[in-house]
Figure (cartoon, rainbow, N blue to C red):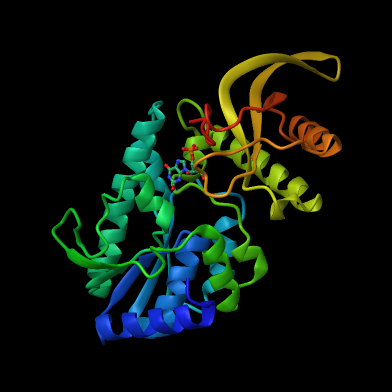
Length: 308
Ligand code: XMP
Protein backbone atom coordinates (compact mmCIF):
# COMPACT_ATOMS: atom_id res chain seq x y z
CA UNK A 1 0.00 0.00 0.00
CA UNK A 2 1.11 3.57 -0.66
CA UNK A 3 1.40 5.62 2.48
CA UNK A 4 -2.12 5.93 3.92
CA UNK A 5 -2.57 9.64 3.16
CA UNK A 6 -1.58 9.18 -0.51
CA UNK A 7 -3.73 6.08 -0.85
CA UNK A 8 -6.75 7.99 0.44
CA UNK A 9 -6.04 10.98 -1.85
CA UNK A 10 -5.78 8.74 -4.90
CA UNK A 11 -8.93 6.77 -4.05
CA UNK A 12 -10.91 9.96 -3.55
CA UNK A 13 -9.75 11.31 -6.92
CA UNK A 14 -10.60 8.07 -8.66
CA UNK A 15 -14.10 7.89 -7.19
CA UNK A 16 -14.73 11.57 -7.97
CA UNK A 17 -13.66 11.11 -11.59
CA UNK A 18 -15.73 7.97 -12.03
CA UNK A 19 -18.96 8.90 -10.29
CA UNK A 20 -18.92 12.60 -11.21
CA UNK A 21 -22.29 14.04 -10.13
CA UNK A 22 -24.16 10.75 -10.20
CA UNK A 23 -25.41 8.83 -7.17
CA UNK A 24 -23.79 5.94 -5.37
CA UNK A 25 -24.86 3.67 -2.60
CA UNK A 26 -23.05 1.48 -0.08
CA UNK A 27 -24.22 -1.13 2.40
CA UNK A 28 -22.68 0.04 5.66
CA UNK A 29 -22.53 -2.82 8.12
CA UNK A 30 -20.62 -0.98 10.81
CA UNK A 31 -17.62 -3.25 10.31
CA UNK A 32 -14.20 -1.74 9.62
CA UNK A 33 -14.16 -2.50 5.87
CA UNK A 34 -17.50 -1.01 4.87
CA UNK A 35 -16.94 1.91 7.28
CA UNK A 36 -13.61 2.84 5.72
CA UNK A 37 -14.97 2.41 2.18
CA UNK A 38 -18.00 4.58 3.08
CA UNK A 39 -15.91 7.39 4.51
CA UNK A 40 -13.50 7.43 1.53
CA UNK A 41 -16.43 7.52 -0.90
CA UNK A 42 -18.21 10.22 1.08
CA UNK A 43 -15.03 12.34 1.04
CA UNK A 44 -15.14 12.00 -2.75
CA UNK A 45 -18.81 12.59 -3.55
CA UNK A 46 -20.40 13.87 -0.33
CA UNK A 47 -24.14 13.42 -0.06
CA UNK A 48 -24.33 11.75 -3.46
CA UNK A 49 -23.34 8.65 -1.52
CA UNK A 50 -26.10 7.05 0.51
CA UNK A 51 -24.79 4.72 3.23
CA UNK A 52 -27.48 2.17 4.02
CA UNK A 53 -27.50 0.40 7.35
CA UNK A 54 -29.98 -2.46 7.43
CA UNK A 55 -31.28 -3.81 10.74
CA UNK A 56 -32.05 -7.47 10.07
CA UNK A 57 -33.14 -8.11 13.64
CA UNK A 58 -29.98 -10.13 14.33
CA UNK A 59 -27.67 -7.33 15.37
CA UNK A 60 -25.54 -7.20 18.49
CA UNK A 61 -26.84 -5.30 21.50
CA UNK A 62 -26.58 -1.56 20.86
CA UNK A 63 -25.22 -2.05 17.32
CA UNK A 64 -27.73 0.12 15.45
CA UNK A 65 -27.26 3.00 17.90
CA UNK A 66 -23.48 2.60 17.75
CA UNK A 67 -23.31 2.82 13.98
CA UNK A 68 -25.80 5.66 13.80
CA UNK A 69 -23.93 7.78 16.37
CA UNK A 70 -20.56 7.08 14.80
CA UNK A 71 -21.61 8.01 11.28
CA UNK A 72 -24.65 10.24 11.22
CA UNK A 73 -22.58 13.45 11.08
CA UNK A 74 -20.12 12.08 8.58
CA UNK A 75 -22.27 10.30 6.05
CA UNK A 76 -25.58 10.61 4.29
CA UNK A 77 -26.78 7.82 6.55
CA UNK A 78 -29.94 5.79 5.94
CA UNK A 79 -31.22 3.44 8.63
CA UNK A 80 -33.63 0.75 7.43
CA UNK A 81 -35.40 -1.42 9.98
CA UNK A 82 -36.26 -4.54 7.98
CA UNK A 83 -36.17 -6.90 10.95
CA UNK A 84 -39.77 -8.07 10.60
CA UNK A 85 -39.19 -9.01 6.94
CA UNK A 86 -35.99 -10.95 7.73
CA UNK A 87 -37.39 -12.80 10.74
CA UNK A 88 -40.53 -13.78 8.87
CA UNK A 89 -38.45 -15.38 6.10
CA UNK A 90 -36.20 -17.13 8.62
CA UNK A 91 -39.09 -18.58 10.56
CA UNK A 92 -38.60 -22.33 11.08
CA UNK A 93 -35.28 -22.48 9.16
CA UNK A 94 -32.60 -24.64 10.81
CA UNK A 95 -29.85 -25.05 8.28
CA UNK A 96 -27.08 -22.41 8.61
CA UNK A 97 -26.43 -22.18 4.87
CA UNK A 98 -30.14 -21.74 4.19
CA UNK A 99 -30.21 -18.97 6.80
CA UNK A 100 -27.29 -17.26 5.06
CA UNK A 101 -29.01 -17.57 1.68
CA UNK A 102 -32.30 -16.14 2.94
CA UNK A 103 -30.57 -13.26 4.69
CA UNK A 104 -28.56 -12.52 1.54
CA UNK A 105 -31.68 -12.50 -0.63
CA UNK A 106 -33.78 -10.34 1.66
CA UNK A 107 -30.83 -7.99 2.11
CA UNK A 108 -30.49 -7.49 -1.64
CA UNK A 109 -34.21 -6.83 -1.96
CA UNK A 110 -34.18 -4.23 0.82
CA UNK A 111 -31.04 -2.67 -0.58
CA UNK A 112 -32.43 -2.50 -4.10
CA UNK A 113 -35.48 -0.60 -2.88
CA UNK A 114 -33.24 2.11 -1.44
CA UNK A 115 -30.96 2.11 -4.51
CA UNK A 116 -33.97 2.66 -6.78
CA UNK A 117 -35.34 5.34 -4.53
CA UNK A 118 -32.11 7.37 -4.51
CA UNK A 119 -31.43 6.74 -8.21
CA UNK A 120 -28.05 5.09 -7.61
CA UNK A 121 -25.88 4.16 -10.56
CA UNK A 122 -22.83 3.06 -8.58
CA UNK A 123 -22.35 0.56 -5.79
CA UNK A 124 -19.39 1.12 -3.47
CA UNK A 125 -18.22 -2.00 -1.65
CA UNK A 126 -15.79 -2.57 1.19
CA UNK A 127 -14.34 -5.71 -0.41
CA UNK A 128 -10.81 -6.47 0.79
CA UNK A 129 -8.16 -8.84 -0.57
CA UNK A 130 -9.06 -11.99 1.43
CA UNK A 131 -12.69 -11.67 0.27
CA UNK A 132 -11.82 -12.31 -3.38
CA UNK A 133 -8.69 -14.38 -2.84
CA UNK A 134 -10.80 -16.80 -0.79
CA UNK A 135 -13.29 -17.05 -3.64
CA UNK A 136 -10.33 -17.85 -5.95
CA UNK A 137 -10.33 -14.50 -7.66
CA UNK A 138 -13.78 -15.06 -9.12
CA UNK A 139 -14.83 -11.49 -8.40
CA UNK A 140 -13.53 -9.33 -11.22
CA UNK A 141 -12.10 -5.94 -10.34
CA UNK A 142 -14.25 -4.05 -12.85
CA UNK A 143 -17.78 -5.30 -13.04
CA UNK A 144 -21.43 -4.45 -12.81
CA UNK A 145 -24.07 -6.06 -10.68
CA UNK A 146 -27.64 -6.55 -11.75
CA UNK A 147 -30.08 -6.49 -8.85
CA UNK A 148 -33.18 -8.74 -8.95
CA UNK A 149 -35.53 -6.09 -10.36
CA UNK A 150 -33.05 -5.32 -13.09
CA UNK A 151 -31.26 -2.29 -11.63
CA UNK A 152 -27.64 -2.42 -12.86
CA UNK A 153 -24.97 -0.78 -10.74
CA UNK A 154 -21.30 -0.24 -11.51
CA UNK A 155 -19.21 -1.59 -8.65
CA UNK A 156 -16.41 0.44 -7.04
CA UNK A 157 -14.12 -1.26 -4.54
CA UNK A 158 -11.66 1.30 -3.19
CA UNK A 159 -9.92 -1.04 -0.73
CA UNK A 160 -9.99 -4.32 -2.66
CA UNK A 161 -6.20 -4.76 -2.69
CA UNK A 162 -5.80 -4.24 1.03
CA UNK A 163 -5.66 -6.50 4.07
CA UNK A 164 -7.47 -5.88 7.33
CA UNK A 165 -4.46 -4.39 9.15
CA UNK A 166 -4.01 -1.87 6.32
CA UNK A 167 -7.71 -1.02 6.38
CA UNK A 168 -7.47 -0.32 10.11
CA UNK A 169 -4.55 2.07 9.43
CA UNK A 170 -6.60 3.88 6.77
CA UNK A 171 -9.46 4.16 9.26
CA UNK A 172 -7.22 5.95 11.74
CA UNK A 173 -5.87 8.20 8.98
CA UNK A 174 -9.48 9.10 8.11
CA UNK A 175 -10.07 10.09 11.72
CA UNK A 176 -12.33 7.20 12.66
CA UNK A 177 -12.26 6.48 16.40
CA UNK A 178 -10.04 3.64 17.62
CA UNK A 179 -13.03 1.67 18.96
CA UNK A 180 -14.25 1.58 15.36
CA UNK A 181 -10.98 0.82 13.54
CA UNK A 182 -10.09 -1.92 16.02
CA UNK A 183 -13.52 -3.62 16.02
CA UNK A 184 -13.69 -7.35 15.73
CA UNK A 185 -15.13 -8.62 12.44
CA UNK A 186 -18.81 -9.45 12.70
CA UNK A 187 -20.47 -11.72 10.15
CA UNK A 188 -23.05 -10.11 7.88
CA UNK A 189 -25.83 -12.54 8.91
CA UNK A 190 -25.12 -11.51 12.50
CA UNK A 191 -26.53 -13.61 15.31
CA UNK A 192 -28.18 -15.92 12.77
CA UNK A 193 -24.89 -17.84 12.47
CA UNK A 194 -24.49 -17.90 16.26
CA UNK A 195 -27.87 -19.44 17.00
CA UNK A 196 -28.08 -23.17 16.30
CA UNK A 197 -31.41 -24.46 15.00
CA UNK A 198 -34.50 -22.35 14.42
CA UNK A 199 -34.33 -18.67 15.23
CA UNK A 200 -36.90 -17.42 17.72
CA UNK A 201 -37.24 -14.07 19.51
CA UNK A 202 -36.28 -15.84 22.78
CA UNK A 203 -33.11 -17.32 21.26
CA UNK A 204 -32.13 -13.97 19.72
CA UNK A 205 -32.54 -12.36 23.13
CA UNK A 206 -30.40 -15.01 24.87
CA UNK A 207 -27.67 -14.95 22.22
CA UNK A 208 -27.57 -11.15 22.13
CA UNK A 209 -27.27 -10.93 25.91
CA UNK A 210 -24.55 -13.59 26.09
CA UNK A 211 -22.56 -11.80 23.39
CA UNK A 212 -22.88 -8.47 25.18
CA UNK A 213 -21.43 -10.07 28.33
CA UNK A 214 -18.51 -11.60 26.39
CA UNK A 215 -17.72 -8.28 24.72
CA UNK A 216 -17.90 -6.38 28.00
CA UNK A 217 -15.57 -8.74 29.88
CA UNK A 218 -13.08 -9.09 27.01
CA UNK A 219 -12.98 -5.30 26.76
CA UNK A 220 -12.44 -4.95 30.54
CA UNK A 221 -9.50 -7.33 30.24
CA UNK A 222 -8.09 -5.30 27.32
CA UNK A 223 -8.12 -8.39 25.12
CA UNK A 224 -10.31 -6.74 22.48
CA UNK A 225 -7.06 -5.34 21.05
CA UNK A 226 -5.41 -8.71 20.55
CA UNK A 227 -8.20 -11.21 19.96
CA UNK A 228 -9.43 -11.48 16.38
CA UNK A 229 -12.95 -12.48 17.37
CA UNK A 230 -14.67 -13.23 20.66
CA UNK A 231 -18.28 -14.28 20.90
CA UNK A 232 -20.89 -16.63 22.33
CA UNK A 233 -22.83 -19.28 20.43
CA UNK A 234 -26.25 -20.41 21.54
CA UNK A 235 -26.34 -24.14 20.88
CA UNK A 236 -29.53 -26.07 20.33
CA UNK A 237 -28.61 -28.38 23.20
CA UNK A 238 -30.35 -28.24 26.53
CA UNK A 239 -28.62 -29.58 29.62
CA UNK A 240 -29.49 -30.08 33.26
CA UNK A 241 -28.32 -27.55 35.81
CA UNK A 242 -29.20 -26.44 39.28
CA UNK A 243 -30.12 -22.91 40.21
CA UNK A 244 -30.69 -22.25 43.89
CA UNK A 245 -32.01 -25.58 45.14
CA UNK A 246 -33.98 -26.27 42.03
CA UNK A 247 -32.95 -28.48 39.15
CA UNK A 248 -33.14 -26.67 35.89
CA UNK A 249 -33.02 -27.57 32.24
CA UNK A 250 -31.57 -24.85 30.05
CA UNK A 251 -29.36 -23.97 27.11
CA UNK A 252 -25.69 -24.72 26.62
CA UNK A 253 -23.71 -21.66 25.46
CA UNK A 254 -20.27 -22.02 23.85
CA UNK A 255 -17.60 -19.31 24.16
CA UNK A 256 -15.34 -18.83 21.17
CA UNK A 257 -12.27 -16.55 21.34
CA UNK A 258 -9.60 -16.75 18.67
CA UNK A 259 -6.47 -15.05 17.45
CA UNK A 260 -6.00 -14.69 13.71
CA UNK A 261 -4.49 -12.47 11.04
CA UNK A 262 -7.03 -12.88 8.26
CA UNK A 263 -9.53 -15.56 9.39
CA UNK A 264 -8.01 -18.15 7.03
CA UNK A 265 -6.52 -19.88 10.07
CA UNK A 266 -7.14 -19.18 13.75
CA UNK A 267 -5.73 -20.22 17.13
CA UNK A 268 -7.34 -20.36 20.50
CA UNK A 269 -4.83 -18.62 22.79
CA UNK A 270 -4.33 -19.18 26.50
CA UNK A 271 -7.03 -17.05 28.06
CA UNK A 272 -7.06 -15.42 31.49
CA UNK A 273 -8.92 -18.00 33.55
CA UNK A 274 -10.65 -15.49 35.81
CA UNK A 275 -12.08 -13.72 32.77
CA UNK A 276 -13.45 -17.00 31.38
CA UNK A 277 -14.97 -17.87 34.78
CA UNK A 278 -16.49 -14.41 35.16
CA UNK A 279 -18.08 -14.65 31.72
CA UNK A 280 -19.50 -18.07 32.58
CA UNK A 281 -20.82 -16.91 35.97
CA UNK A 282 -22.37 -13.79 34.50
CA UNK A 283 -24.06 -15.61 31.62
CA UNK A 284 -25.65 -18.24 33.89
CA UNK A 285 -26.62 -15.64 36.50
CA UNK A 286 -27.93 -12.97 34.15
CA UNK A 287 -29.60 -15.19 31.58
CA UNK A 288 -32.05 -17.52 33.33
CA UNK A 289 -32.50 -19.70 30.23
CA UNK A 290 -28.81 -20.77 30.26
CA UNK A 291 -27.57 -23.51 32.60
CA UNK A 292 -24.11 -24.29 31.21
CA UNK A 293 -21.23 -22.47 29.51
CA UNK A 294 -18.46 -24.30 27.64
CA UNK A 295 -15.24 -22.97 26.11
CA UNK A 296 -14.24 -23.96 22.60
CA UNK A 297 -10.54 -24.85 22.36
CA UNK A 298 -10.45 -25.87 18.70
CA UNK A 299 -8.18 -24.11 16.22
CA UNK A 300 -9.01 -23.44 12.57
CA UNK A 301 -8.36 -25.81 10.85
CA UNK A 302 -9.94 -28.23 11.49
CA UNK A 303 -12.76 -26.15 12.98
CA UNK A 304 -14.10 -22.96 11.45
CA UNK A 305 -14.28 -19.76 13.48
CA UNK A 306 -18.07 -19.70 13.48
CA UNK A 307 -19.82 -22.84 14.65
CA UNK A 308 -22.77 -22.54 12.30
P1 XMP B 1 -15.26 -19.30 9.33
O1 XMP B 1 -16.37 -19.64 10.26
O2 XMP B 1 -15.51 -19.74 7.93
O3 XMP B 1 -15.23 -17.71 9.28
O4 XMP B 1 -13.92 -19.73 9.83
C1 XMP B 1 -14.21 -16.94 8.72
C2 XMP B 1 -14.57 -15.48 8.92
O5 XMP B 1 -15.74 -15.16 8.17
C3 XMP B 1 -16.78 -14.73 9.03
N1 XMP B 1 -18.02 -15.31 8.52
C4 XMP B 1 -18.92 -14.64 7.81
N2 XMP B 1 -18.95 -13.35 7.44
N3 XMP B 1 -21.01 -13.74 6.35
C5 XMP B 1 -19.99 -12.90 6.71
O6 XMP B 1 -20.06 -11.72 6.39
C6 XMP B 1 -21.05 -15.06 6.69
O7 XMP B 1 -21.99 -15.79 6.36
C7 XMP B 1 -19.95 -15.52 7.46
N4 XMP B 1 -19.62 -16.73 7.96
C8 XMP B 1 -18.44 -16.59 8.60
C9 XMP B 1 -16.41 -15.21 10.42
O8 XMP B 1 -16.98 -14.39 11.43
C10 XMP B 1 -14.90 -15.13 10.37
O9 XMP B 1 -14.43 -13.82 10.61
